[in-house]
Image (cartoon, rainbow, N blue to C red; front, side, top):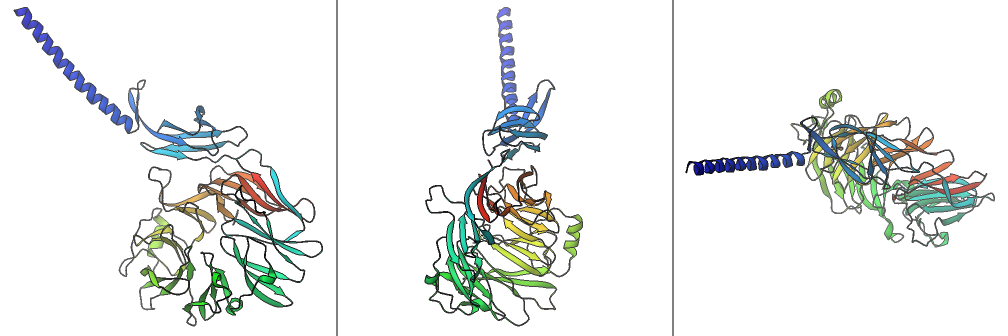
Length: 518
């Protein structure tokens, strides 16, 4: 009997121990899973938890060999868990230049890298060649077209256009000969932003006429009718960013011409009647809207007060994108941020409190981002139309260069330095932050010709008489071409080729070359 009780007691103890160990196992397993999911790893040798993050590398082109701290860890694309801290990352691919970067791995975060690999040797492939000398060149703002005028030894001049991003299946000739001119005929072009149309000023026998011409097909002068609106010759004119309207500005008014209605239309559409001794700041957007900045302040007001008026390019349907904006005359905020600030929070403006400073000198509306770049005499701001909030971009009156192709960033230059302001970011990408960062290794003294690569993570520019490329932070800077013989250059949207218009090695020759990048 005593033996039976003893055995039962031992069984109860064992059951209790099993239950305790089961609970400990479940709790311990849950803790391990929790910490593992939070980026921790167990180091048995050090008897400790290690904090980790994730590195994800996607190269262009792929695959390529990935080295982390000198160790070959396989081919890209690849993700790998690493200890937090600085890691040395290298990419190698046969026939390509090495890519190297010191990368910080952050706890519980995924660090994303998109290295763009460049061929070791970049050799030209001739696309087109003609005898003659280039007299004039133009390139569309979106870098989609080269337009150039070639003068032959006989004095005859031919106008050509070359489409940069021509589809492979496009069987139309490229480049296209647009027009043949005599030695006496002179032309100048005001090219639309997309490069497909232009206002052509043709001077012949001392008489200047203006025409709207299609730059994608041959031009027959005999079939063209000159623009019959006198204002075109008497006013400064520029293309609206919708590539359809021309904005005319004279001393008395601002008006517009719808080029699709020519030659039937005989009068431009009135947008603004000017007052004497008054400066007018205006702009357009890609959807065709016209914007005019209205001054609402008086000399007695303690702030500058503005409204931004929007209307259709024919002057109809006026509306206010900004009803009232208040900008301080005093510079206290700017002085403080110039001395202490590197982070600029969002704010609203009101007569009683505003962090916006200075008299507005320029603005640009971006419909895709639903915001406005505003430059004053002291600083630069971004206005978010949807939230009615402002954010300082730069504590000096910087010049906007361009928005990135993905419309998440903008490039600007202040004094001698280039900066990138990030407006939107991927939530999971800790390597980007909303705000401004200086572009390293490039200054305005080095170049004033700088462009985005179509992937929005690289820039290309002329520096030290070379076409060069780097990441948007200035890292992995590489020389591509000697710029001496090159008249025009760009990189195709597929990032596969550099395309150039060049003076040929032989006298009186013109070349279009392409250089393979990847």
